[in-house]
Length: 250
Image (tube, rainbow, N blue to C red; front, side):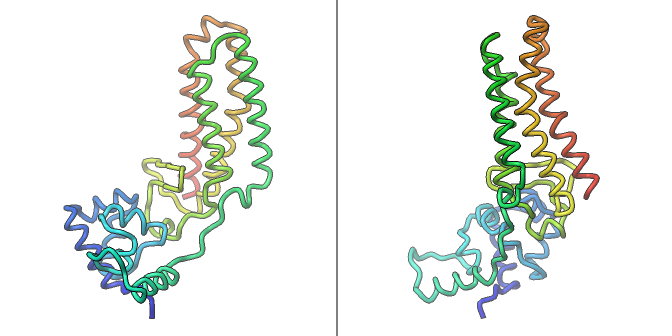
């Protein structure tokens, strides 16, 4: 009784898209989807996953309520019956949310905390030899941020539409990940999470000590090459393994 009318929904999306002057391909690109997915919505073949409702509504310039109601709402308030209908539609439409990483992280939170301790000790060692510089602090900060994302915040499973479309980007709360030429799905996502976790903890635990060693052995030379080594550690140490792992398990 409260199921979403696919044909009505598709017609509403198509109308809003045309109002915005967007092609199906342009709308799909903004949502990291294929244009075939948008075409299926507009023809009533399928409807978007719940995780796409908010970004789709934002791109089309409407509220989620209007999107679920398949019509613009000029009035500022809704009748109780209308609210009840929208809520029940949303409940029927919604799927069970996958678990967050921290719920099944196992030993990773402990490893992350130990890595933070080592990073702090390494930072103190560097302070004794000179001022803190970006080539030291930026990798450590990124390691800390990525560690929070991959170990605690990320979902353990991607929405189902990732398995039926070639999608090259993941937007999951604070995590924004895009790898050109890579299709994210639930086959490669667990491996991607593992790579991110290993890199984050490794950078936190090792980089401050590598930096301190460089300052101790060859301080003048190290000042000239530290930024390049940091760049290799960031790009080569994270994005290359992520890309190779994601492609291998697509």
